[in-house]
Image (cartoon, rainbow, N blue to C red):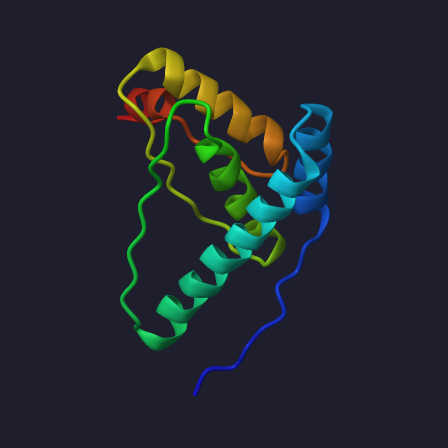
Length: 122
C-alpha cells in the first residue's frame, strides 16, 4: 500500500529558483528541473518505504544542466527533511571544485564535507 505524500517546496527550492533565475536560466527549464526533482524524490521515497529497487544515472553533454538538476533534487529533498547526501563528481579537481562551490551556494543550509576534509581527518 503506497501512501502519496505531498512534496514540499520550501525555502531551499525557492532560494535555488531565485538563483537560477538570476543566472538567466529560462523559466521553462526551471519548471522542468522542479518536475524532475519531484520525480526523483518520489522514486527515492518509494525505494525507502517499499524496498522497491531503483537505479539512476545522470548523463548529459557539457553545460546541459546535470549539476542544476542534482542541486534541485537536493533542494527538494532538504525541504522534505532528507538530510544526508553523497555527491559523486569527477576526478578533475577543477570540475570538482566548481561543482562543490555551486552546490554550497545553491543550498546554503547544507553542511558539506569535501574530499579534502575527509582526507585530512584520516
